[in-house]
Image 1 (tube, helix red, strand yellow):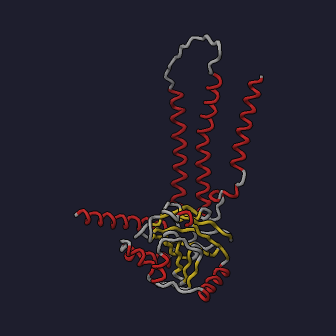
Image 2 (cartoon, one colour; image 1 turned 90 degrees about the horizontal axis):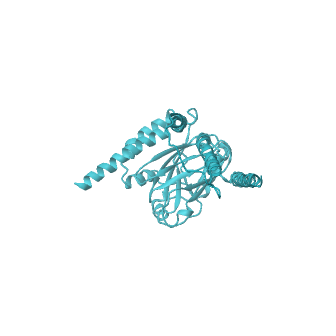
Image 3 (cartoon, helix red, strand yellow; image 1 turned 135 degrees about the vertical axis):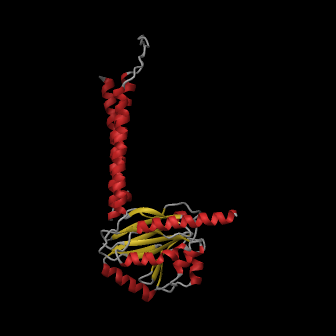
Length: 326
């Protein structure tokens, strides 16, 4: 009886500790607090994956504890050790069948959500385009339609799809706004696409998620979602009060170093293309017309564009490597 009470107490304290770790400060786990349609879809997929994993993990751990406790060796045990190894088709079907079913279910939801995210978030609404450049160790954001630029700060209208076109003028990084959606790589010479949307006003954390050296920990930025009217007012304020970003100013900005939040009332119109092209991304010019047509008609499938850019960029790099070998 004493042993049973002790076992129950141990189990109780273990469960209490797990509950405390999982539930305390849940609001701090921003990945599990989605604020946009992309993040919500990915959140549901995370929960489904966790549940399916627990279907396997919990019974296995429970059986392990039971077997260890039930068949433990005791002092004075004189029972002969005569194991009988018998083939069991039933057990084999169970421990092979359950994982196969679980993988099939997980595969179904993963494929379904992947194709759902590849479609435009809101085909009826014109998206806001933001060109993103990762530097050492800061982020440059250009608004081509508004004609302004920022450093380590993004402002977007609530409920409007945002098409991020990302590249790098430094080592490869990863652009990530956890509460709005998953991350995408920023690579020199490549223009990758990511379509996100904020469902409600608020401030969201953004960061680089790929190690890039000494100042990597400071590659963070703030994303502020406001109403369309407030966003338009902010754009006008930046145009009237901020200095212009010149090519010389960009060269200075691109030097390795940490930067605070900055605003620019204008920037060279060809700056983003030059950043991509100088890193070997001539293919960007070939796809520029396609991207504009995509935005003006059904506002684009940025993930599809991203795949095209990635494939074309990979071919460019492969061809460059072949030339170098020759």
